[in-house]
Length: 434
Image (tube, rainbow, N blue to C red; front, side, top):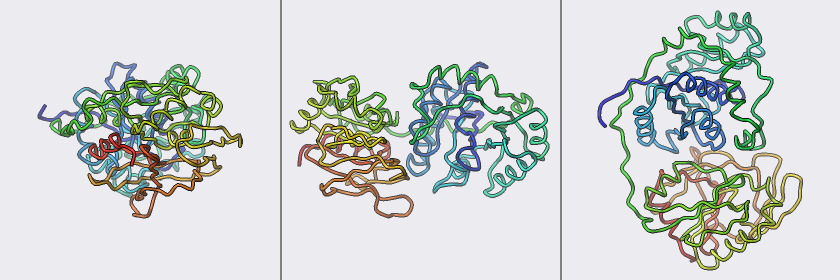
């Protein structure tokens, strides 16, 4: 499809993490859907958990937008696809508006996107105006308006609104008595939250719109012709078994789309349910997740452990990322210090740490180009195995995560974003024992 579409696009940003960006974006998405709007949501930067909640709130898949990891043309193509089927596009920023290289502000300026600032107004009143004007002018960015979170009273909201001069207060959200629970890697998975839809509906109910201010928000012209060519079908005829359950939940939907675009058939299975690697599989993908929360269940999953060992012994390509790698070590010590036996494909012991052990954007150099992604983990692997390679941190260029190769297994704390280099991904899932 050629031409352009004028769509309401808003990049939801804040001065820092902890302001309530995800809560506000989810509330806004759910409220707009209930008004009959077609809503698509994206998340800036590397993230697995926030997109799950935003998908639940909007009823549509949530993609990733990041000028480095995803790339400009992939971002442009995703925005075009969303514009073809939506009335409103919401993009939740990452960290603070200007944090990171590239930042959420960089994304907004690249595509001419207006910014909707979320401020935690719980401990301020008129100072909100100084905060928002600073956010606008520092870049600068096109500041479309503000949503004030954790507002106490109508009087409090009026003081916040009056302080912002020519910037509109689009909506307010009161202090929440019930909030989205969190754990060490972020929010608790939506599927684990009792009545998560009821909570999202409550947030949408509490979001008080200024309908006149909302109606004044400008639309963004999106080029509908932006597309990315499909990769060559390098995995045609191959079936890839993908672990998918609460212990292996961290994967980009775009990764699965890339495997399908490469020609692969996907077969999902659950190690937590003690399901074996599917018999028809030609390769296995173990994404990240929370194996440390399910040590006892994984340790007792005899069929799963026997099947992944057999697949490895047979030389089947296995790609294990972060939590997937943790589940293949000899043992895993959880946060309480209890040690659980794991599948034993990768020599070494994993133990949880109190502090972050790895965080940030990284890339893996391959013969086909740079495979981009990120890392975020609280555990460490102690192993005598020498790494086969290391990722490179972005933007510093320093050495990043170790990439281990044990027979047909490729394992690392690195989470790859498959669309960044499909040919390298095809090689990973075709790799036999060296």
